[in-house]
Amino acid sequence: MRITRGDGIEVGDRPHPERAALLEARGAVLAWDVLGGAAPTARVHDPARAADWLWEVYGEQAAAAILGDADEVTAGPWPEGRALAQLNWLEAWWPASGEAGVPALDLSVLHAERALATAAVEHLLDDEDATARAVAAVPADPVVAGLSERLAALAEDCGVVLPAPAVTRAEFALAAGDAPATDGVTVHSGADPVDWALVPAGAVDAAADARWAVVRRGGGTFLDVSVAVGPRAGVPLAARFAAVDVVLDGTDGLGRRTGRTPVPPTVLLLPPAARRLTVYAPGFAPPDAPGDPDAAGRRAALIAYARTRPGAPDATATERLAGRR
View 1: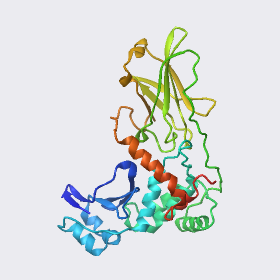
View 2 (view 1 turned 135 degrees about the vertical axis):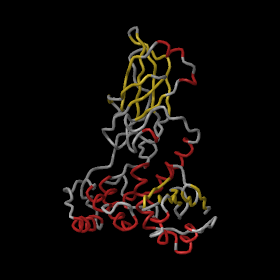
View 3 (view 1 turned 45 degrees about the vertical axis):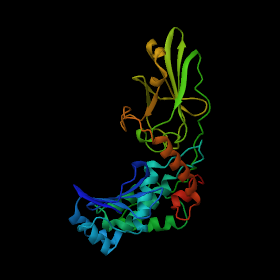
C-alpha cells in the first residue's frame, strides 16, 4: 500500500464512505473496504500515540515503515479489528431492502456482538470506557446461544445490568409498488432514488425509489410524495421538489411514508431536468447536497454484496441471523 505524508500519514487509499468499515483508534482511523481488501488503510493523525499499537495491526516491520520514511508497505489482515469495523459498517450502511431481498438486521444481536468485539480491541481505542459503553448500548439480551452467555459475562465484568430478553422479528413492510394514488388530475409524475447519505440506515428501503406526482385538485396544485419504508421506524422524513419541502408524516395502505403539500402553479412549467425529488431526514443531513453520478452503480454493488453476507464464511453473527428472527 502507498504511504502519503503531509498533514498526517495516509496508508493506502481510503474507500468511499459507503464502502468503508471504520475503526477509530488512538491517534489513527482504520478503514476496510467491504467490497475487497483484507488489510485496512489508515489515516494517522497522531503518530506518537499510534506507535503504541500500529505493530499489532500491521506487524513490527510494517509499523516501523509507516512511522519512518517508507513510500509503501505490505500489510496483512487484522481479523479482530475488522470484526468491530464490519459491525460499525452494518449499523451505518446496511442496505435493508424488501424490494432487493436484503433482510433487516436484528439490532440486539448487532449491539451485543459489537460489545464483545469492542472488548477484544479496547486496548487500542481512544475511549477507556468503550466496552462498558458498548455493553450499556445493548437494547436487550439477543437470546442467541453462545452470544448471550458471553455478553452476560462481559456485562458482569463491566458492572452493567442488561435489559430483559426481547425477541423481535426483523421484518418490515415491502412498500414499493406503483405511484402514489391521487384524487385529482396528475400532470407530472416520476421516481427518484434516495441518496443513502441523506437518511439514517434502515429509514427507507435501500433499493426502492421515492415517487412523486404533481396533481391539479380542486383548483389548486399539489405535490404528492411516497417512499418505501425500511426496518427502522420513527425516523422523521421530508422531501424537497423544486425548492418546495414536504413532510412525510402520513402512511398509505402499502405502508409507505407519504406527504402532500400545495405548490405554486409554476411547478407545472418545470422542464424535465428540474423535476427531481430529494428525500432526506431533517436534522440528519441537508437536502441540497450535490448529486453523485457514481452513486447508482456503487450502491447496486453494495446491495449485491449485502445479499451474499448471511451465508458468507466470514459473516458476523449479525449478518448470519439477518431476517431470521
